[in-house]
Length: 106
Image (cartoon, rainbow, N blue to C red; front, side):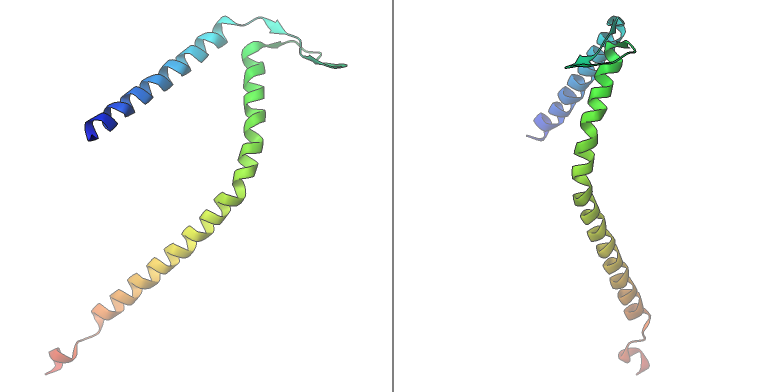
């Protein structure tokens, strides 16, 4: 079972490399310029296809990033509180270890 999961990681990595390689070839092959138009609006400067795709990709990532901010903030606050609690427990354990026990004084 572990061997199958281990092999799946290689397959997943290989698929990502193939997709990225295909996107790079697509970007290099399609260097012709496009004029973007929507309803009455027309982009004055012609843009290459790969640049146009990258602009739309990053424009789509911005809302996803903004939507995820509250969850990341809450997770960061929880992590900070847990780290504070861990340090407090470590300090308590260190102080217990430093106290001389009653049996040592006999």
